[in-house]
Image (spheres, rainbow, N blue to C red):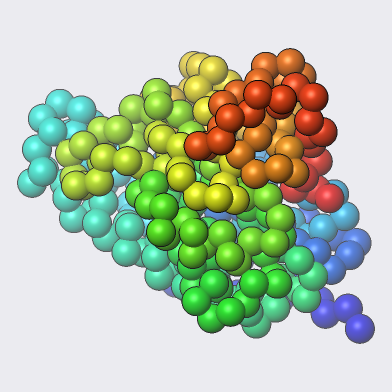
Length: 276
């Protein structure tokens, strides 16, 4: 018997059904702090969920104005004291939202079929924390594919090695060394210098893709929403971990593996992977 998707909501966390699908599978999209309060349907319209249910998670990071002031302050002063609290609170909220998302998935809030997840910025942190929680509780048969974009979290091998256990299929980390927002925030307010949204991650099943050239012109190199359709159509990932292409003939050296035969490897676009 097919279980209907359920709406899950608290003051911090709300799953919104953007499109009802035709089967039991689901796609869950989680936005970051610069898109708080946005129209989620419009923001994620470039994502094709195929016959799956299409969900968006609305969660409270912190008031957007606080973040904009914080980024501006980091750019001008690099002062640790200027606006540390909003960033730290937002990271804690992301972790709480991640645990709530994991609990919702364990309770089949999005249905009983496999779930694909995509997260941007602190939204990627939400997705990642959900994966860690699912891995810790042994729920490794829920999440099918995962895409992190400009992830606001450390590029920690041990943590990614744990999180990847909760992913049955592809685990893709889209990053850009030109991301000024993450660079400024982590330089000013954090001790970590290796950030997943800026650097490749060393984990056996994570496919890292530098999408800097696809983000040219995007707000501070961090607004993936502006280039989402291009990214979904141009980034192609192999079934082999650590191999990807941008376009048809541009091989990339991914993660810590050499992709010397990438151009000859069968690949699928992110759009096809997430909608399959």
